[in-house]
Length: 396
Image 1 (cartoon, rainbow, N blue to C red):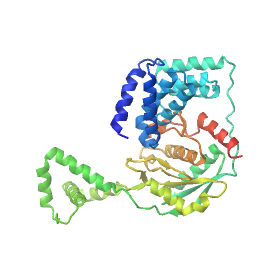
Image 2: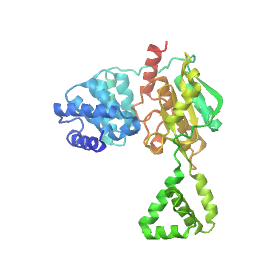
Image 3: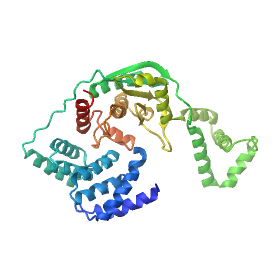
Image 4: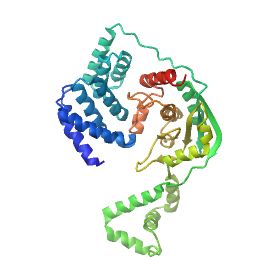
């Protein structure tokens, strides 16, 4: 799929669709085109598809205009799984749930909007909807999750990890999902296949910035002064020696060089790690009551061409990293909260429930560490209802 075509198409549609809340001007031909675009986005993984969530939102608006309420809600949920803090569309979804008599969902979604939205207009509209729900003599339904402690997931260390965080993961996953969590004693040596050496990226950025400011001739002049065989040295080797030279011009340059280079970490390919777990534990993964294996690592991870990931899930195995959660300014409590939220998100995929569409849920998609911190370290109403339905229909 051509990225630009999706962006431009979505932008054109949005110009006609979002000028006023719930007043849309879509044609049937627009729906057909949006459906085709949505099919393309469906084939992408979440990390990429989040850029194109507007396609889903526009399709949801168009369906709503023509009173295709079930289809509208399904499309909006796809978009909200990618950008749960879009409160205008959260409100539209809540109104559709109300019209479809899904009062539990409309009630809880409205409460989340009132609690988290910044727009006074949207908060007032959500409050009015909440009053309409209460006027139907609605009483909140039960959120009791059946105990399924006969089912279990395994946690496994990928290289040494913080045992405090691992124990917190075990306890909170058991508490929220009502399943058993078994911590394997093994410590897996991560596969270095397709590992990214971020040192090279750093050298590249420094060299490019120097050339931008000082010119190519100055860069070549410094390389000429460095004792290195340019005929056999790789481009990365040249840039490394160049950056090292710059460090040595500073006071205590060699010490700074060693300190800064030690802070730059390599990134492991999360998909390869996930497959590695399956190959090692395929017998355990296929045990009757095993729901999957979650690998936990302190290493930074990535997949495909994405800069970094908090977690990566697939069939029966998943990998999560707490690397970016352990920041210098983060308290122990905050580090635990961040790690627990990611663990709850990853285990949800292993258990078999879709990503949440409400922003406060631990399983809402975070676009940044700031959005991660804005969530709660518990399952939201939608995930709890999905879990109850799953347990009552497929796991009994």
